[in-house]
Length: 279
Figure 1 (cartoon, rainbow, N blue to C red):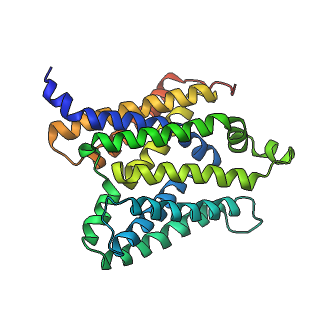
Figure 2: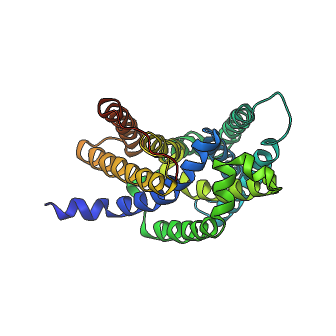
C-alpha cells in the first residue's frame, strides 16, 4: 500500500467522515419534509453573505466572511420557518426555489464587482475538499459536534415535526418556532460545509444518502446508519477516483453519489427488498 497517497488524502477523508455524519442525519429531515432544495437555497443565501463581505474588502478567509454568511443564514431560516404553515396557494418548495434563484442572481451581481468574482463562484460550486487543512477540519468537528448535541437533546421535537407533523400540531407545539431552530442549525452546518465541499456536494451529502436509506427501511435508527454509510462510501470512492485519475474532486464525488443511488435502486428492484415498518 502506498502510504504517501493515504497521508495526502487523510485530511479529505476525515473531513468527509465528519461532513457525512451530520449531513446524513439532517438529510433524513429534509427528504421527509419534502423540502429537497432547502439546502441549496440556504447555501446560496450564505454564499451571498460571503460574496458581499468579499466585495466590501474582507479577505476570503477572514472571520467576517463566516459572520456575514451566518447573518444571511439567520434571515433564510426565518423565511423558511415562517412560510411552512402559512396558508397560501404558493407551496413551500416554490418559495424555497424563488429564494434560491434570487440569492443566486444577487450573488452573481455582487461577484461581478468583487475581486476574483468568477473564481469565487466556481469555488462556491465545487469547494476545495482535496486541499482542506487540519485547522478547518477541527473547526468543522467542533461546530458539528455542538449542532449534533443540540439535535440530540431536542431530537423528540425535531423528529416528530419532520416525521409526524400532524401530531406536533395536535399537541399544540409552536411548530414555526421549532422550524426556525431547525433551519437555523441546518444553516450553520451549511455555512461551514460550503467552503470545504461546495454547494453541489453539500446537496449530494444531504439528499442522496437519505434517498438511498429510505429505499430499504423506515426505522429511524437504521435510516441514520444507512445514510451515513452511503455518504462515507461515496465520498471515499470519489476521492480515490479523483486522485487516481487526476479529476476535479467535487464533481467526481457527486457523480459517485449518483452511481451509488442507481445501484441501490437496482439492488432494491432485483432483490424485492420489502421496506421495513417504521419503528
